[in-house]
Figure 1: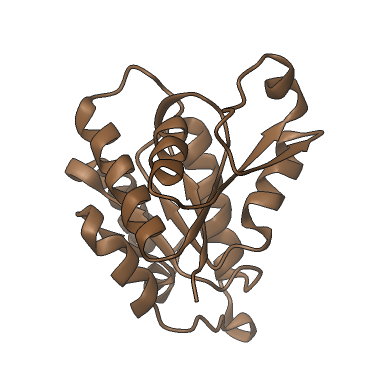
Figure 2: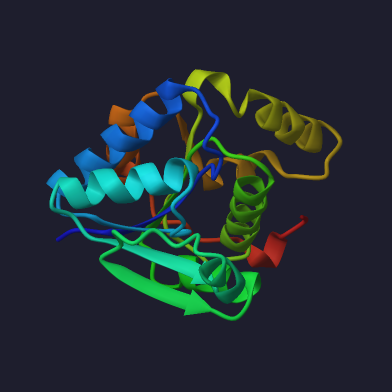
Length: 192
C-alpha cells in the first residue's frame, strides 16, 4: 500500500535545473510506486515541479496552502486535493498530520524551519515516521556541521542523529523510507 509522503522544498523559481530535474524524478518514482505526496501547494519552485510531475505520472498530490497565499493566486491549479488553512502554523500541522514519512529537498528558510520542527517532534516522539534529508550536491552539509557542533558541545546527544536519514541520490529516497527503523524516543533519558 502506498504511503503519504510530506515533501518540504524550495519555492524559488530561480534555482538550477538540476534541482528541478531531481524533484520531478522523485515525483515520478513516488507516483509509479503508488505513493501520494503532500506539499505546500503553490505554483512556485520545486513545489510546482512536484505537483506537475506527480499528476503527469498519474499520482495524487495534495497541497496545503494558507489563505493569504491562496488569495494572492499562488495555489497550483493542478493539485488533486487542496486544503486552505487560516495560518502558516495550521499549514505545517496539516502537512505532517497524516504523513507516513517526510522528505526534505533543498530549500530556503521555510524548508529549514519545517525540517527542524519535524526533527524536534521526532526526537520528542510526536512524529515517529521516517525523515529523509535529500542532500543533493552537498546542499545540507553546513547543517550537518552544525549538528556535529551541537553534539560536540553536548547540546545534542549523538544517538539523536539517528532520527533521520541522509541520502545523496533521488533513487535512494524511497528505499530509505522503507528501511527506516521504528523510532522509539527515550524520553526518560532525554537531555535535549
